Image (cartoon, rainbow, N blue to C red; front, side, top):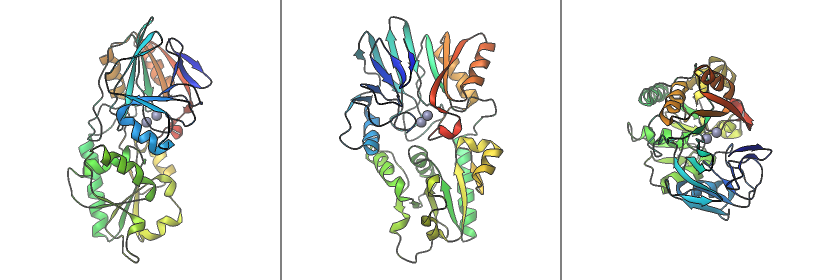
Length: 332
Ligand SMILES: [Zn+2]
Ligand SMILES: [Zn+2]
């Protein structure tokens, strides 16, 4: 039912590609991250809450068709539907029912609660294509509330010391999740890098409740950033934009921060282990929940997970992508 091609994963029975990296006739998109949604295809199909994010990335005139979660779509000899993946706003798993049974392609997902998107819904299937961005037993996340409490303590410590708190995080998903989680415990305003504004606005337009934000560049001339929390994409690091901050402490929010070497490599004062992907226990739990006889792993660390599943007597294999290793994953 699914074929690996030079443009990405293809379903011949339905004549569509899933998250293709090439430019194709019909792209079915799991979510708006750069390693899943690429510009240049002739048509896009995604869940309705994903479309505004795609338009922010590709322009308002991108040819996109939308469906609601759970709505059934006839494509060739297949029936296709989107189901919540709990990864970021507008993220979806794709259920494909065809002559060879039921396939579910997870896209990126997580099982932890997230105030910015609908929770992951386990879908029974024969073949489950699971992401494996953090497909190693070392990846195990702490409860979100504990991570947010650490973040607030770090911010408060920097406030007392008269420093800014510069938190690097992904522009789509992570930034909004942090702003929404913080809104449950404080009502302070947060400063953001200009590159983050469009996606924050898109989330606000979708009704996600988050802390108030202002662009750092809109601060009055000479205003101090001491005591402020500032969110920025990692690419802002070392740019002239940083000069406005004055004295600061920095941190990076990502699942990769679980690994000491990654923290050293990023060379930040603090690693905040907060991921929008399933950790190792959540991957295994999900594979049990969907009850599939066959599991195909993709993205990040597909081999270790496939090998482990084989050891458990589950038929498994790897689907290659253009995005191997952690460096390639967006929003991790
Ligand atoms: Zn993603
Ligand atoms: Zn991804």
